[in-house]
Image 1 (cartoon, rainbow, N blue to C red):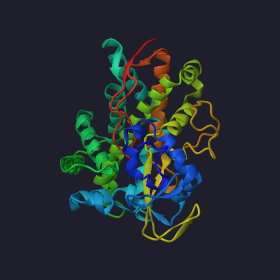
Image 2 (image 1 turned 90 degrees about the vertical axis):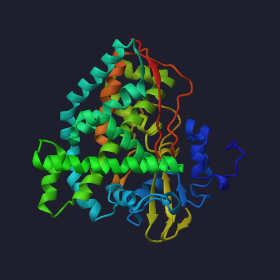
Image 3 (image 1 turned 60 degrees about the horizontal axis):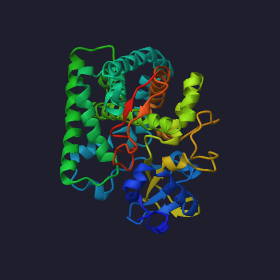
Length: 408
């Protein structure tokens, strides 16, 4: 059904999986913002919030809890062990447990540490692009660059052997499927749960190895904290390492893929980046705003809250549309235009408030290094498809493939 003819009351989260919306969700988001910005999902999945001001409020207001799990429908068929692993992740915690855990893991993502990583990221970018040159300057940008770069970076940062990169990425995809908001087939659900439990076993084994042979890495440092027994349990360590590894590369992969496609489709903006590398930091923020890697997140009301003229009752679920907030006309003039020199870009792509993504600075740094080098080496690159295949997910917006020709 064309969304122009679809009654606004009938639009729900399931519509985000329609092929036309996967290709471009922003017209649908605009309808929600203008016609029903705090919208009741007809499929019974709670409220859908689409304006920047309201999204920011939900993410920053203590009356909305992150300590929600999958809906009853989504939990069906999922084992208690998997649900328990998800529930102990920071993503699904409120203070004081969230505060305690976040303070421990934040140490791995300080600005100084990100700056120190920059030369290594530059070397990885160069190596991946050199390989593409040797392969005739044709590459699938997602499989050959946007996946291996952030997986390798986060693996090094945490202390995961790079030789395990492909396995942990597979398990990360399994976790992403469970959290992506799409109804899974029984086979998909079983495979995803198996992947999560393999992830748990992997980190259990790696932690045991680090206990006997510590290394100068984040995992060994956190084991020291865990062994003191007052701030971190083994279970919390395992499941939050899973979260950091999965989130630490998945969002960056989508940022790189969405960003390169947007730049190809806006050659005037690509030329600005090619001609003036000093705009790269602002450009990455604008690419995050324009077509961000995470489109949706959720909360649960723990008190009655008035929002946008509607009453959210205690216990009701609220889904916030980060992608819609980033295209809100009230916050970003001419929001559907890509403008790498847009002033004061502050997108909500990495969330807001106490749950702002821990790895946001790392993702931005990787994207800055990558786009700078791509602009320097291949000012005339071309995307070799008009219809790139997208990840079928409500929450995560990304490409499965992006064939490109690298031309200097």
